[in-house]
Length: 406
Image (cartoon, rainbow, N blue to C red; front, side, top):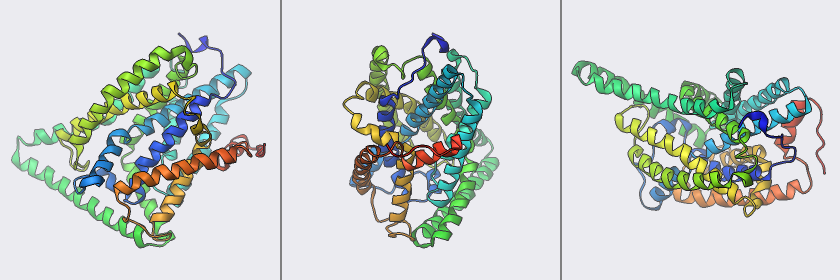
């Protein structure tokens, strides 16, 4: 099947909104731990200090959510790009300049979110990854999209394996190995200091001090860009492939494929995710090891399988889950509100509850907050065409005020 074999879809695909709503809940569950924990701590691992219900909750989020929902959101981002492109071609309307402006606005949203609200922003990574996609893969043939996706998922693993194997090779010379490990120990000590300093600022500092800390966090994010950006790009390309082949655009015609991936994605992916969580328990990225490399490999494969399993399961059941659609239609607004509200709750310039909610308490808080977002989104969209952030995004993209009220 080629990309031009399908007629462009003109109506809104509600199952994509349901998928976005479902992904929003997963994103909140995963992000919650870093609303009350410095972002730099992501390289230090977690779980070694936990026990009881806290350990169960943290590991459940890791197995079911971590590395599974950003791929789902990224596939939907790539799917949205494919739909916009084909609709513009059907109307013979200009597209590339408009889409570049859309990405620039998203970049500004991400930069503002990162500096002013929360440094765990994903919008900046989306915009940068999408720039790469349209620069290098604007006209990539359909049959190659998923193959390139596999290449980009593999790149961070290659870096991890090279680092781990280099350390193992250094064991052949005890002096060299000692020097290498001393270097990693120094990096670990610096990371511990950075985490402690950031935690104190978030817990006790003023809003201005928190903004300054988020600027330092951005330097940290750029350091790990080779690990962040390639997987996003891979899932963008897979999302394009899912639309171009009709699997995500006409799900009723592809139910056998969706059923297969629901079964394989969840039955194979979740055990792999559990094995990865076991291998990576208490591990940190500042000290590459073969165990970490194996764990990351399993986690990457599990992320692909489980996210496709979630996508297939929700798409097959989207009519029963249609109550999630309003939240998905306001995905940008709801994502920003999650960060805005919970950083205010936890940071010192707000309620100052930093470190006072355990992992076992984070899960019900996230679920209740998301349920409220679903209700408010439904109420809002009964009166307005777009969420506030979506309205601003469209207005700045098209350079004219968009109609807001219904």
